[in-house]
View 1: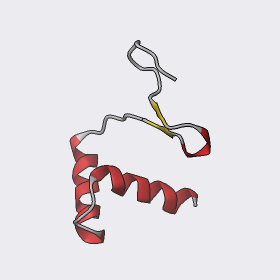
View 2: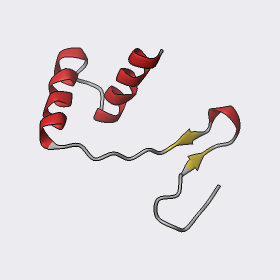
View 3: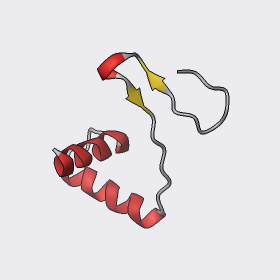
View 4: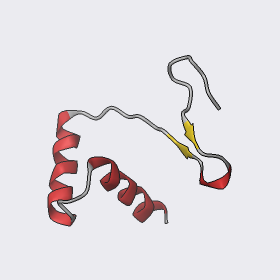
Length: 60
């Protein structure tokens, strides 16, 4: 699925393994809390990976 308009989903690959980009804005306090969580849990991961792990932990 390819669209030129801003805001349309960007889907990588096809089938059940397709990935959809979801962008969010966070205020500075929430980013600081996220960075603190990363420092405690696994300093080698990115913010994106930390958020993925939190989602999987909460929903899985």
